Length: 129
Image 1 (spheres, rainbow, N blue to C red):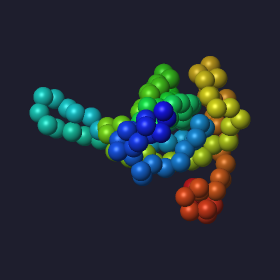
Image 2 (cartoon, helix red, strand yellow):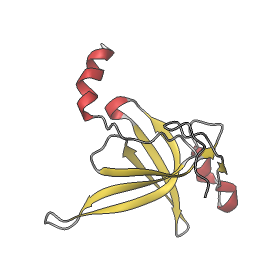
Image 3 (tube, one colour):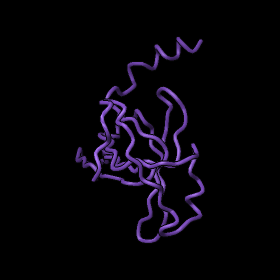
């Protein structure tokens, strides 16, 4: 049964996605339509990945950031055509799959420990900045 689902969803899956996990700080470039015309612009949304769920075409991830003192979370479909690019800004070390506890923390307590993980695509050390 699941092989049939995989074959059916395969054409809709993106092939050029970076490997990211909860705790990583990423920048998601989202396509937005403006006005009534065909105007389109790309808006970056940078924050910490607090969860990933689902698989294949229904996979989603939640990104959280604090903007002007207010916590903002957005849920993105991993394979959405509205996402033009996902950049990994820094990788974090966490011991949980879901980082919902960050919602209750403020300031420095809400930081995620940074780590230099091996880049899984090139097997080279991740870039430090």
